Amino acid sequence: MKSKLVQRQKIRFRIRKRIAGTATKPRLSVFRSNAEIYAQLIDDENAVTLAASSSREKDIVAQKVPKIEKSKFVGAAIALKAKELGIVTCVFDRGGNLYHGRIKAVADGAREGGLQF
Image (cartoon, rainbow, N blue to C red):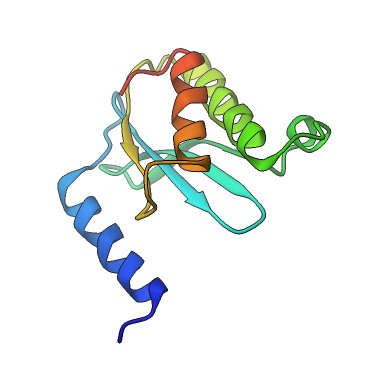
């Protein structure tokens, strides 16, 4: 029997075969650990991270709210950074996680911030 991590890794590779980010339409990659959540805008053609946001940033840590609310703030923060770079569209990479809970909250926060995917 395969471990959860190995199964998730296979799902991640399957997703990454289909989606890739460009400079004008980067990949919004989300990583979720038990305690924190991280989001990056990645240009896969040049292999460079354009912007990043996480629940460890000072203004988000200062908010004493549940993890789902923090995830929404991370999505809004990455959308704000994207807007500063002139990026309006992206492709969403859930990183092998199911699209619900904190992953969905990041997507919702980014959409409310003005990102389209």
